[in-house]
Image 1 (cartoon, rainbow, N blue to C red):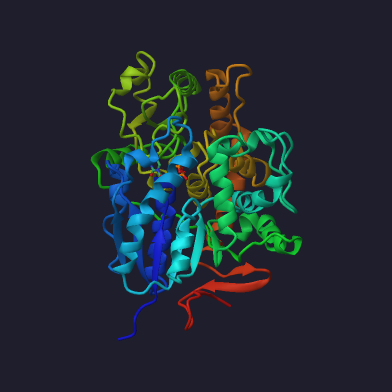
Image 2 (image 1 turned 60 degrees about the vertical axis):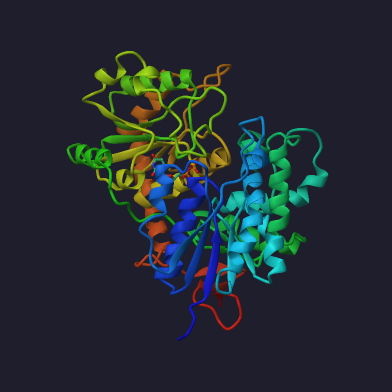
Length: 480
Ligand code: UDP
């Protein structure tokens, strides 16, 4: 019997990386007849959303679990150093990866995370071609690949001028990825290292498409001509979950509640798997939602005052306090008829797909941006960390499906009045109608980029059409 080509995939820690990896894995198995070993690093305390994602998978998709990282190897005092922590977790896991790979049938290609470049050496020793899968925008990928060229010419601790990547929209210092804003921090060093290593990948897959970021994708192709070593980039997006099973009572009740609401009347408020607000920001948001008198679904998790990514590694399951402990007094009673407050986690894709959902107040994680795009739902952008500010800028200034609230000068938070203003603007104003029309146009472009059966469409690299298909004799699967 002919052996199916075998791909190993290695997502970085975090639901925002795991989800698009898993979706791609399912497509490789179901639409392209490949066999996938999906290698995940266990956490000491896997969150239930993560656990659910990794169950009920197709038979040719095998999950291989590596033991959790040694706590002493990832001990860093500063909780905001996210890239460092992720990179150290991956680095520590390499000692388990090699023996795990040795037990597998021959691996024809290895697809690793943007922060998983530690595997490059191992793959090179084992002569396995390695691809990077960037689960972010092409604009972020351009920064990642271009920073190693730019770095020697940069002076000082911070980015003082916009970063100009040839033929790409300049990145303003304010929009720069939060973790690398300060060039003296280890997160910057790690990001630079990942970008440098990624240049030696066989190819880079990016979760975007020409209709969304055609200019940047073309610019990436031309970087080679400017002397920057860039591997072939394959825009395979949007790779997004097509739905989700509602297994929990809370999710089922939420959808039933949405069934009873008027079309496009509900605002979804959610900050992804990792985002958390400070206590004072949460108070302002609660009052603003109430003052707007618009229907809402709010995914609430315990506030954190020292970081805005407080639930990155556990999807919010750290919080033990009841909602009433940190929401304004009487809030839950007063909004009982107006909205639903959901603790920690909601079936986001099911809510976005629902006809009653009219807008999404989002932290602009890339998956949330794509999910909103594919469902034609306009966004109120509330970026918190990582490259979320770049995503918000891209979607507001270029794609024009986003409204951005202003931060109160001096305080660094969004006031309740500003929350009320933007919520009303998007839910009932002319601005909201224009955003909705535009969101529907972008949705059509997203749908066109995905085949009817969810397989990856033709992509172009340097004007040559490629397609993600079952490979030829050797080890390349992206063939002309
Ligand atoms: N998500 C969800 N329910 C929640 C919060 C998040 O289903 O309550 C999913 C969301 O649909 C997306 C992923 O978790 O697929 C979050 O990824 P994103 O890139 O938006 O943000 P991150 O969590 O990486 O900050």
